[in-house]
Length: 203
Image (cartoon, rainbow, N blue to C red; front, side):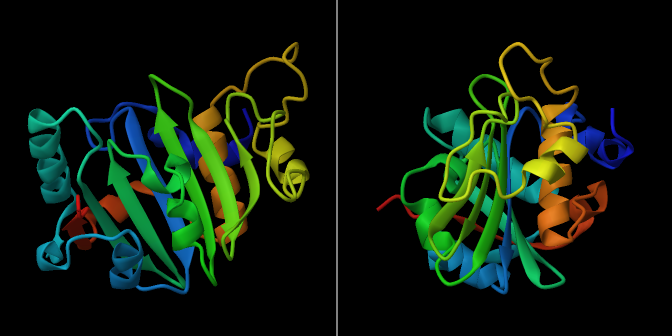
């Protein structure tokens, strides 16, 4: 396993905070409030909260709904906003959301889903540049699917055919690649920051 994966291995374990389904997106040059607005949250629900409070809201939503989690949280990190979707996957997988969030900016999004397909996507100004399932990184799509192929190899996502071994830690590899693109290393410490959270508007 490449050394670069060690600092991201916590993201592939069930450590009691992020769990086995979540989305993490990095959005350049937008504030947390701007990111939430692009996600069409209910503006009346926007408030500061801890990650644990955000997670509690999500659990409450899931207890009464069969759909997606209805709460998201964002925090600023250098020139990027980090959006966390506990038990969610809107940015990485829901039609139209990535296009809207990445308009006139850049987005890198990683979705972990232990019961369906995980997803890595890099988009610039509503154009999906590179997209793949980290377990099957050789099956890429996008307008420039090979843009990060050398860096993918460096982080253990160099699988070229189905006959090749699957990545040793595909989630850690996806976050390592995200850190190369964004310069942001997603560490446990991020979860100790104060988030701007909100409920997704269901209308």
